[in-house]
Every structure is written in structure tokens, then in C-alpha cells.
Length: 367
Image (cartoon, rainbow, N blue to C red; front, side, top):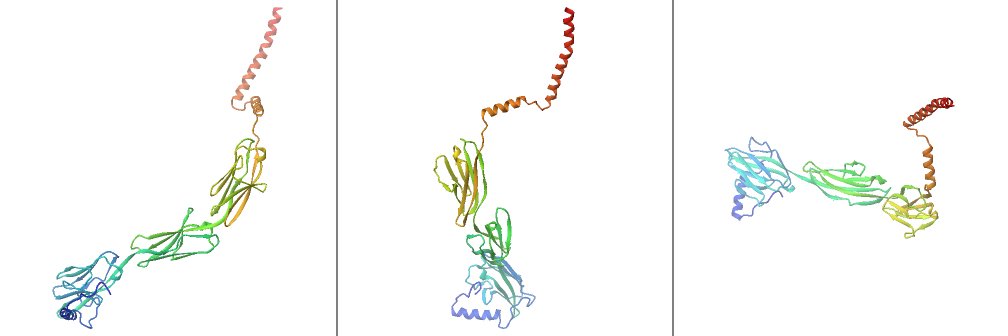
């Protein structure tokens, strides 16, 4: 339909309108650019959706009639507005230029516009094409998805815009951000746990900033125990066994000793569970507590277990510490001062040896 339609006039005015229209654009006259040296219009006008488009036509003083048309619809004839659309306004009607403006342009305004003039009883025309650019918009995108490891997934991201936007997918994970594909559809065969995370869809067409949306992909997998170490604790001390497991959904933990499950609330023993970690705490270890324990981690996809040993660690006694002190005291010092001490002792013993003959001589003289 174009920008607007004809104005409803009384029948007498319609006769005049018809005559003027025939005078401006007779039947059989082609509408094409470059039909004569004038009128001269722009080849095309490109605007973004929501902006204003200005259509200019260069003329001279030989022109007696001027009009702007959108396809078969008259917008303006001279200073008279023949259009009902309030967005279409006359900017100038001088001896050198005839121009109009279309405000708040939308996609349905796109198309050919014709500047028609009458001079020396010969109508002439020139055409300008209005191009409307539209910012990209994502109109459909997949919802967040949870899927078991090894299955296939398909993600969809549909975008509109003028020109048609380019759609790209990227995988955003804590380890890296990687390009996945350049298509509206993303197919992943046999998905792995490493492929979980956010998938970002970006739509761009250089009209405006790219539009970005994200889809969260959760990959479920059974537990695996990443760390389970035995520990040594002296009798009467506090001891802790730890079991770490990775799983989606998070694992549930259970502890066993000799095929007997340890329940929360047992005297002197406490179980602390977190999403990826379980602790078995002994507040006062006894001889009975030593042995092998089994940590079992499970979720809806499976389970796994690991054996952990709590063993006795001998605590040093007071007699042992005293023996260590005596041994340390009797052991010659091996540092730099040791040479000095040995040399001093040798000097003192040498001095005594030289004094002994003098003492004997002194005793003999007295007798």
C-alpha cells in the first residue's frame, strides 16, 4: 500500500484531481531515473527503522508542476498534501529543490518513490529507492536444557533484521570461550561433561550493536571419587576422613565400616556432607575406631565407592623425649664452632703435659 492513500474529497474535487494527475503523469510515460537532465533525485536513501528519511528532487525555474509519489499513491502535489499519513511532511518547494520527509520510518515504507515534474508541457520523472535498515532481534531461542552425558542436543536461535543478521554460537565455560558454529541451529552429538556451560547466541548485521542471548546446558553424569586418603591419628585425638566426589546432580554420601553403615548421631562420630565433599569426624579416637572405611557416592545416574583407612599413629612419650634429649646432648656439635672447641681442649691438655715435668722437678728440689 505504501506510505499512505488518497485523501477523500468531494466528487467535484475528484474531477480536478484526476485531471491534474493525468497532466502530471500521462499514461505511457515510463518512470525511470535519468529520463532527462532533470528532475534529478537521489539514487537511494538508506535509513534505520525509527529514523527520518528525506527525499530530495533537484529542479529549475522551468518547472510548472511538481509532485512526489509512492508507487501509485500521491504524497504531495506542489504545496498540497494528498496523503493522510501525518509522518509525511513537506520540507521545501523552491525553484531549485522539492523535498519531503518521512518521519519514524518503518519497514513497510521501503520501496520506490517518484519525483514527477511538468515543464514545457512534457512530464518528466526520476525515481529514488528508500531502504530501511532494521536492528537485529532474536525472536526465538531454545530454553535452558539438562541432558545426560552421551546424548545429542539441538539448540535454536532465530533472529530477524535488515539486512538479514548473521547468527553465531559460542561456548562459554570456566576453562575457555570457544567459537562453536555460524548458524541458527547448533547440533552437538554425544555431549560430554566438558561441553556443559553457557552457550551464547549472537545476532549482528552492522546496523546496531549485536544482540546476545544465552542458553545454559547442564550435562548430568554419575559420580567419580577424585580424592580419598587414609590418615593416622593417635589414640584419644581427633581424626577426620575425607571423601571428595564430582557428579551432576550432586552426589549423596554414605559411610560404611565392615559392611555396616555409619549413621549420623553415633556417639563420638559425626558425618558432615557438602555437595562435593563428605567428612567422617572422630572426636576421640579409640582402638576400636581403627580400620578400613568405605565412602559411597551416588546420584540418579550411578554410584561409586572408595576405601579409606584410619590407622594408629604412635604419639611420642616423655621417656622417649628424654632419651632424645640425652642423645642430642652426647652428640658432638657438627657446626663451625666444633673445630674451635676441639682446638681449645687440645690446647688445654697440651698445657698440662708441659707443666708436669716442672712440678716433678720442684718436688725433688724440696727434698
